[in-house]
Figure 1 (cartoon, rainbow, N blue to C red):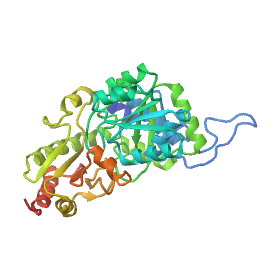
Figure 2 (cartoon, helix red, strand yellow):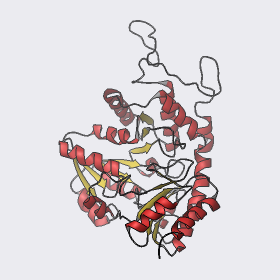
Figure 3 (cartoon, rainbow, N blue to C red):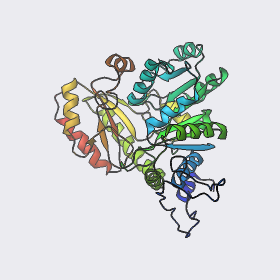
Figure 4 (tube, rainbow, N blue to C red):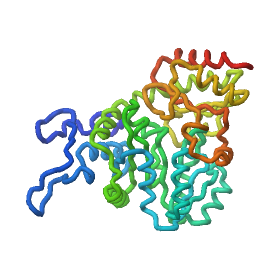
Length: 383
């Protein structure tokens, strides 16, 4: 099998050793019997390993072109897990406009003295080059960025990081392996909140880290077991179930997002649209280079101020106001108080996250209904 669409449909299919079920069963046991006093089977204790978790990790790693996938209990647990590979006082270089939860985690880990962190605008080549001279141990990349959809050149950053001996980890949540493959561009790790596109149905919380090498993967697996942040059997089962439709979902969601972006781009009450699928977007050419599609996430700024933005957010009927993304249902989000509420106001300002910014995760609803919903909401605000 060479096509990823075939690989994910076939992942773990027909693998049941007990009864030959086509779909792999859910294994809820917390314990597994030893063969003898000093010989265990493939599994012994649920925190350490589980058939469903192993199957999900293997499936994601195969899609990403990686050697090993470690499944965690949340996306933030996956982000935190990779920091366990660092020594005390090591420096992490992170994007200044990253997801608010990532920014909060790294900021507070630094305040605890567990690591050092430097946030930098990774779209600024000079600023990034200067930051690299500080010899970070880990460079974290988020592209497209959350919520401003900024793109950075993964291959170029990974090459620069490798030259100074730094590891690189890319948050690939927004695009999934259906649209972007960071490991093929030189990254050491590709990280996902499986809560989002991989599961795709808004009913699971989880994370995964795919490593380029088996050695790095085994180190992460050791730490995941040691710290107890491995994902549950049920969540792993549900995520793999959702992943079977990943490509079909992404194709339609992306088509919907592209149409919505074009509609918003022309709307007189919209100041700016952030979507790398638009030719006017600064990341358009780079998206063509390192992505196989622009994805289904976009943001836009409303003309006016906070009150106009609030009216748009509260005026929609189909879009649900919620902080997550990547599900079959369309969501609308106000980053200032939701996804990036944990960032200090000055950090949000530095990142360019304004109080007129709205982020939307485009679902599988009829394209014309989604556009009509946004149109009706925008019509309610003053010019």
